[in-house]
Length: 123
Image 1 (cartoon, one colour):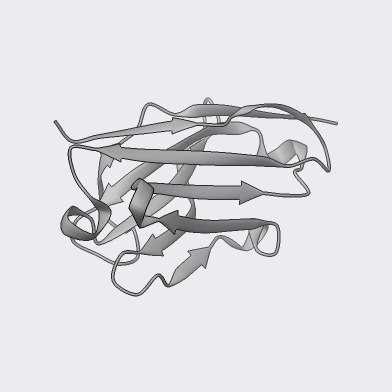
Image 2 (cartoon, rainbow, N blue to C red):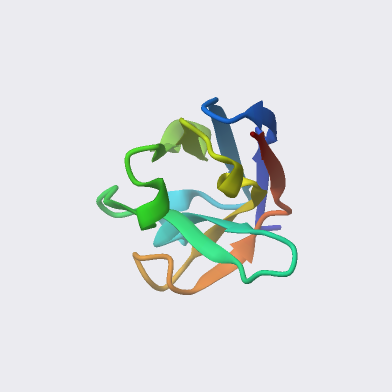
């Protein structure tokens, strides 16, 4: 079974840091996914892309609001993708999901989703 499991969410004060992890089971990133992305969703709002890392060359992209604060990385040996979040702001509060794209390197068509992990940033 192809599965993604996120962890690392929690409550943090503004200016603080968190590291989210996304572990894949049932597949390896390089063999199955063209890219792995992090997305987030606030209740009542649309899900939005946060960051993406390509499986082939490790290229990354970020939404403008998190550039310079968030870093996406991967550990192929552990089949894990991370999202390091620094200088967190209350507007970063959301449920964060990781997802695997099997057709694009820009996380345009995520197909496999994790269950999400809640990040709450207090002011």
